[in-house]
Image (cartoon, rainbow, N blue to C red; front, side):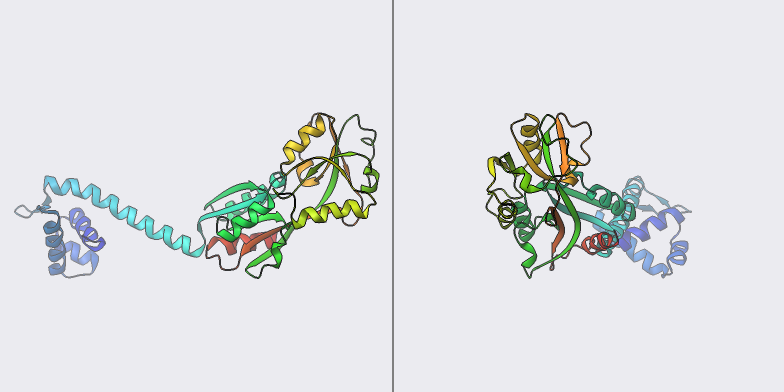
Length: 298
């Protein structure tokens, strides 16, 4: 049984004539007869009552007609979906992003992409930078959004595009003596109890070294009471008035009605976080070029 046989059968059932079916499908009447006979042999029963004029379906043929129409629709749909997937008009894209980046413009970019590619399905995972880097190289993610704390951009197997340059802010509780300031320098945080927000899980990444060096360049070693890669945990501890922290503004700017929290921008040329979209050069997902193109266009 094949698609041609099904098409010939449904046309013959609707025309109630092999002659008209041959004319409609631009084939010979003998070819119509051969297709029907082959189909009946495969199923094991007669589909047409040829003794009556006009020809009509047998009870078995009536049952098979409904199923044949459904099968043909499914086949056509499968072919269309396959062509769309090959051209990048449908399919799925698995995206990983850095903890704290969920309140960025990533969701805006996703909505814009979905509007242009409505048959796509985007899935997201929120991880630390080292987990994202490992997942990308292992093929778990098609693309990741991360602060390059693992120096991943130096890997010749990947391509990358900077998508954000985010200012850093000091998170502190409302009663803190510095909470009324409009800006702060890192040097002014000397002596403060610090909850350190790390981009990685092991706190010993390239990115961690960069952040610690910023304290050292400001003239002091930070008094780090606690470390976590989860900014939500850090903010809970800051709100409890146990210390302060430094976070990217993309995470804090959309916090509405944050209980007992104040965010003050940090001054200084290096007081920012660069977010990159990173993907493997050999990734064959046809949606990926469309996603990257959409990011380039903003």
